[in-house]
Length: 227
Ligand SMILES: *Cc1c(COP(=O)(O)O)cnc(C)c1O
Image 1 (tube, rainbow, N blue to C red):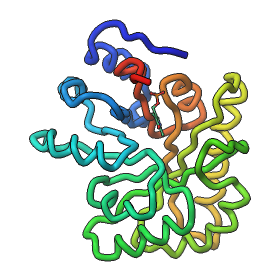
Image 2 (image 1 turned 120 degrees about the vertical axis):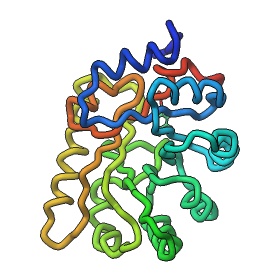
Image 3 (image 1 turned 135 degrees about the horizontal axis):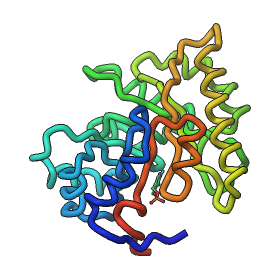
């Protein structure tokens, strides 16, 4: 699906907002989006920006320092050697995708004042192109994740494989929600998994139907990214 944009950024944000339940946080995904467009989104009420590269986020944060109350979300794959930097730049990391990375972040976060908010990235369907835990891998690692006391592990994130039909997408999102409930209520774990980071430009309404609490929208707000 391609997104050629009609109207201003503010108009598109307002239109989408109208359709969202209050419980859903709208994260504007701004990778490859110039800071001028980010300022327009901010003026239209956006306070959550999602970036997928450390370097790009660092540059933009320096340019947008005057915007006081922005919450920055890391949504892309994080290399272990950039974990420290990620903790400095982001309040949320949606893309924690293996135990080693989680444990490294946990060690690094030991001295931070505020615990970083973390989502565990899961793959409900097999997908060689994506990072993240399969469901069985996650269950194996949950006891160790449970010991990462310096992280606020509070959500699951998922990106469905490309090309699924709406009914299949719904199933992926519902299974993510069911997994979150199972983890949250597991008697031997203390992981308050209340956030579901799921839904992008082409599937966010389906994700919301399955209980998404954070949607990550790029192209539908800012238009297609240059390839
Ligand atoms: C790019 C990206 C998005 C936004 O995708 P759009 O199709 O532009 O809405 C959301 N989540 C992640 C992890 C991304 O990398």
